[in-house]
Length: 254
Image (cartoon, rainbow, N blue to C red; front, side, top):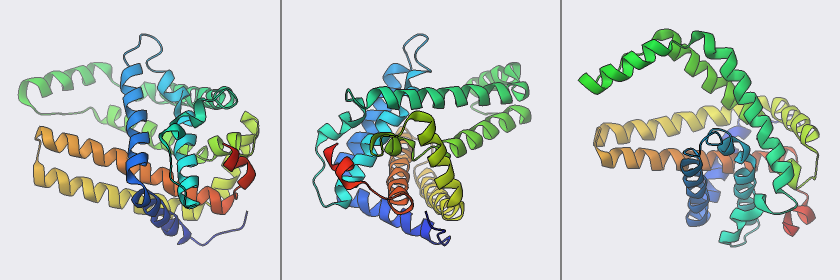
């Protein structure tokens, strides 16, 4: 792994957008399949909170495999969705997913003292009665802190699905190498995130301004949020390919 200039992050983002533009249909199918799965299992008692986190690496490697095929000039078949659910991959990837779940629980425990449940309930009642929302500052701080820390953690672990499947690394070795790779390239990573956030929020604000609070606006905003997340995943593949490098034989046999 070589030290990369900060502007490399913008190049990764451009490559991610280029991959999406090359085959938008299949990539959109992958992200909506993930979204649909999350919606369905979230209603399952007890497991509704666990399963979406556990299966993050399984869906993640499907997007990474699709990006690899696109970068190689291949057509991506719908069967790529099953990449992380095969007999030899689902076990290691679900172990990684349990790490995601454990981190999520630790962060929730850490921010819990700042969450005012009574204030949240009062805010919901006020919104229902007056269509206005007034949030408790401590709760806002806790939620924002949780989201920032969890997403930074996910970023540090973003190479783990590929390392697990393509490099055949055990769980904690993949975690170690992913963290080292991300931190070692932290400047271009942060530049990539900064540009991505600026573009995504800019587009979302424009749509919200044009269409207001209509149901159509909600659908468009949700679709754009999913697509922007997908483009970031494609950019992460571009980063993985440059920072760590592809084992072509291993990736192709998947």
